[in-house]
Length: 463
Image (cartoon, rainbow, N blue to C red):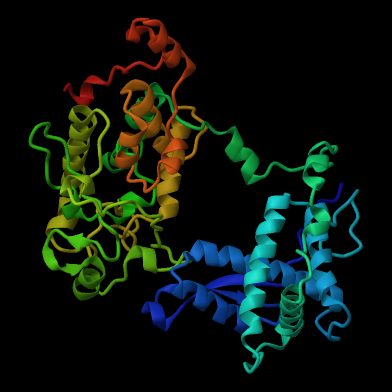
């Protein structure tokens, strides 16, 4: 049996170093002729000036690229499009929603599988933003001839919308419910969303302990998992930590203090007058990892956390079971430093970051900042070793679950612990088990609750 053809994609998104980022990478949309789209590049630059993240910019460029493929299918990139071009956007939405690959055939040559109505809506919103931008470029030349049809449709669509034409999705309203009752797609492959749905939403306390104790094989890997599961950090956030951010201790418990700072404008322990961007540029000739661009090996995102409260204590991570997990982190940290003391004491570490590559057989990579993809890989390997199907974010959900169900911390307090700006964000992580609810309202012994405070390994120490 022949395999299904890949979707038609006469475009690519490539990250290229740009002067504005001092060599950091920025996404560009390249078209069929191998040249970048000039209008898409100008638009992406405008979005970046509004502090859009690279991932959001890339998603919008993908929407433009997908529509460009549709225009290529309609006109072949040769004859200019004519007629009511607004209808073309409606036909695009229809093709995305219903798919073009039906019963093993596709006369269009696009080979699109149908997508959710929410995905179509997001793509149309992106095209709407692009059309608004293009409409303002009346005197700007189109540098890439392959984007002629794309720009022409965008301008026509903007004129039609300003003239009062309805939303391009109006003919698809109300079909979402009917589609959910339709027969499943033939030979449907498991998508990444399907795989994610099969993973655990959060880890139980016993699973989190087992992952750290038996899944992680090195002090560095244990430290990362401790920060995810017991300090509540997202997986990209530890990659911004400096060595100096973790050397202090809480006097009462002996646990490591984890200093949290914005990777660009946060302050440095070693300087009170210079932010981190200036420090990295002056000492290491580096950009903050959040400014390198998603295509760069050392890029690490920063979703944002509230670090503006007047009390300086709120600039540190809040450990769950601080006297146990925070102290165990400290012991792992000491072992980590001892394992790599030749690198740390000789000044060969050409960056300030805490997490770095520890594989010595590759001399070029040893000591380089740990990449985000490697961080994901080491967490995934730890889960596989103990037989758990979960993603790295399940550790952050464990943090919320443990705080709510085991420690019975109020949601407003958990919001501050997780450095959220809104309690709506915290609600996603505030898990309480039914057994815990029944026990609390019935007066049952709290020790009988399935997820009561677990027994930590003796190697972690006692409070």
